[in-house]
Length: 297
Image (tube, rainbow, N blue to C red; front, side):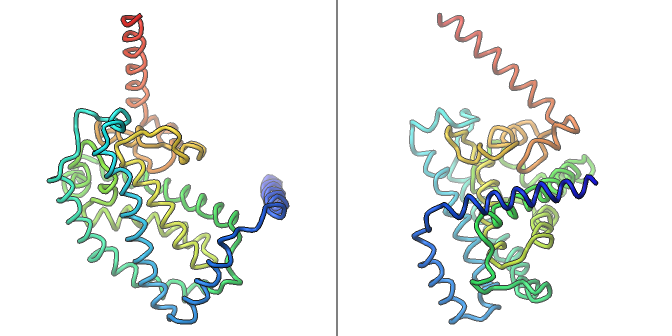
């Protein structure tokens, strides 16, 4: 009975969104995007699209999303939004991070990306424009992928912090106590494989078009670069996502090393109490701010 009720609720939500979508104006970018997509299909093989297309999407999204955080360090006004203001970025750290990223991207992740074509063939995942899901389906699928990845990340990330294995793998990622956006994928190759596996689980569950692979890549990079940015910028649209952890939540993990293990959402840490030190830290900050205001008045 409960399962039927859940299905009915989901169907009702789907119909409601579909009804609202019918009243929305046509997207002016849809036709150019359709033309570009069909041009890609006509001029490149599925292997080229799945392999090199995925690599280009990943590299372009990663480094473009890193640009704002990189630029912030040169803008004095933005320094009031930096979480750990006593630990500025240095060129030495950023250059070291960049070199490790290039190694991980092209010697660890690229071989995995080369398997994308065979993955789409095995699961009969379409490439055609006519098979592409509507935007709201894509958004729902990306959210579902995020929920699955977040669960995997929480438990495996927490395991990597176990004292018997921490120094061999995860310690590399914690080299930077004050994180910056480009450091999001700065990790030991084994960690890239272990935590990266969570990315693909949602794809196996939800993927009904190759576009989801790329949409989910962009969403995941957007989230992980944001939480590693080191800046808590107001009016961040990601804060509209329910239970979104954000930069302060993950920044505390790098500063404290214990707790706040989830990647995107806060519920697993709340359920298992691994956010207790973060909550205590926030309460202490609030008290200090109140004391400062009283003294100022």
